[in-house]
Image (cartoon, rainbow, N blue to C red):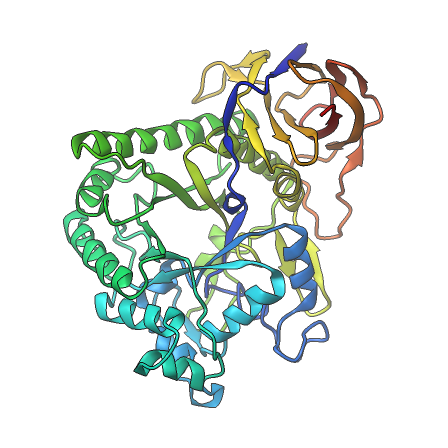
Length: 496
């Protein structure tokens, strides 16, 4: 079988926003405690921040960190996490039925982002709280001084304002599992009023309004229309969440779910544009896919975990090789929508459905770490619309599934074209590219992630990216064979 990708610099999707490579950190299980914050551990510094985790986060080239949730934020009093630690209250976290000590809060989070070179994406509680708590929080974070809340920030050790740019107006408010769940009408009105007061404090912020929790919600689509009727002129991004699983143990159908992912994003774009047209607006609303990943391995474990523990083992999926292939094809799908998806947060970052896992001795990297790391490092520049020829297959839920999933990114600053290609088939796939308008100078790097059993996990750290030495490049073409079930990357230096 043979597949081909045509790379044309005149056929551009969009410049890729750096925020496409972001993540979620939530007060959930061991995501914060025992994860990024672990005082007394041999790997932790004086702040209690695990330095092995800091290094791994830097290796992932993460931009924004959405915090503190997630479901957790809908029952969270942000004031509990500021001030002297010995005076902070211990609370029941009803979202995950855990004990929250509040030893890690706003100031600790901001210090951690400074260490990791990431930026905050702060969520406000529109579940159990609302307008007043949100306006106080943004005053505390962003106002220079001379008021009650800004001076309290200074008293607590932060003389300069945090100047947090990106803010989420609640989380998954359409879901009945959410503390303070609301109808679309109720949430839309509250989000509008909250956005109004937050912009009065700081008119330079970006705001993200909550869309549907999943495509399967009965209110999917109508929720977005109603919420945007209230907030279209107030916000900059609409949030959407998407997780996939392979509970049926059907590999072909699992990897084909990237088609559903593509249709999901396109559907939300259509809803946004319909509201734009109805409002006669000149503003185009972009998307924040601020939760996405594979998630299903830990469901039974979570059901068996006793409630009211501090930092219990929750949502600790141990990802296998097929999960890495699914994450790879989801990343390519995100790049295909770089014109409208400007923020995307892998959920989550440490221990909880995460690429990075910790124990008392150190960290280990999950299979999904590798494709994310490569795309976040080299998927910078301009996404080029993929024109490919490929064999196809049919699965249980999808027809004409491309065996090849591929896309090229052009980085003009580096004079480099980077090709990401995944072979979803179980046989080798001859692969070539046609470089239209480009002239290749040399092959900088060629790697493949392949050869592992689809159910293999990486607790022993045996997985790694391997060089692909069977690649030929001439002035206008790259040729190779993609291994069965493989994730591949090719970096090509091109003439100025």
